[in-house]
Image (cartoon, rainbow, N blue to C red):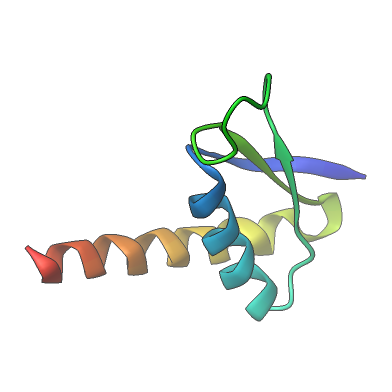
Length: 75
């Protein structure tokens, strides 16, 4: 069974998180929310299997920390 891990604000953010998680060996699906008028501005659900949910939460936390660190370094 697939469960929502995170809702990304855009397709590009969702794809970056997906790539990071897949590099850690976690299966990921992306699903757009609402009407798809513009893929880049549509929110995307990031789904993982229930079996991998706890590990996926840890990896997501790491991914968000890396992103936050990079943003701070560029300021």
